[in-house]
Length: 426
Image (cartoon, rainbow, N blue to C red):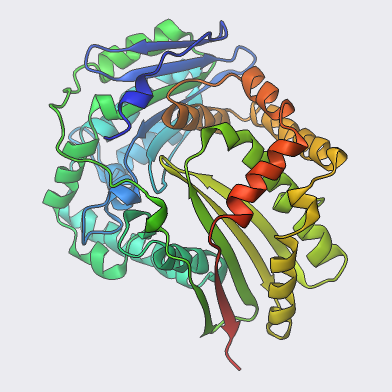
């Protein structure tokens, strides 16, 4: 992939509990030993998501995430379910626009058979035709559930309109038509292109020592063949790939659903400034959006903003749900708040409050092993190296009101905003 070099950066100075290893076949391993727990969370992250789906086959990366659970050369789908749950553990997976992650959590004493199971799913899926047909129906039901959830559906449509013709606009789940058409060759071809050691990251968080994880990785993943140079290259994002628009549609909804959003090309120096800005704008009960729209005016029940950091771009989205008769007023207020002095010339105390909010979330997130594993994988994928909690905390602490003003100018003033509204049919 285009970003392969960035994933091999110098790891810098690591804490004693975090260690890294590179197997001869190119598989990167990062372990984070946490001695006060008795479990281990293992994750294999593959650098492939919905933006890597082949043309005309949206949803393929996500469908493979489902399909690997339906049987391997040594296990039926029922064996897979029982193997982990009979030992008190759990097994799961998720797909994003840029990644697929298959992970499990188990007691340390069950680590070896659990590791064997995880590796089997990634290395030896069988894709039995009868099970694939049943799983297609499951995923189509998942798509239907999104279509019955306006808050989820509007974000999918927002991306489709924002990135027409670009892979970032593809729905992660795909469409009923595309899912129905997948073949075994489609699944195997995608895995050949993307499920190879240099495109994977194994993260382990919990009580197992580094040496144990490496030994098991060599045993169960060491024979995974390194791939020759792939011809696949992820289509990059450029500012011109984003298409500003404004649309209001009548839908079978009880509330008006509103999404505003924009995107900018990746800007690492402003990474933490953007996070603090988002905390001020729409993250939590004390955020600008919640106070102004919900607490002061009672216009909404739910309102928030969210940042998404991708390989080569950053997206900001703002969501609000309101009564259909209050749509215009809510939109007007949202647009006014996005030009607020609170964002472009923030009060130092507001900035300090937002930083404390983020620091609290950072510390509490370290207490959740699955989240800790996932965050480690995300940091390595995005920055190319492990980021210590201390480094993150120092970066957040160093953000100034001036940094917030610069971030606001970049993503709120200079970037083109779009809007999509679902209004109730009357």
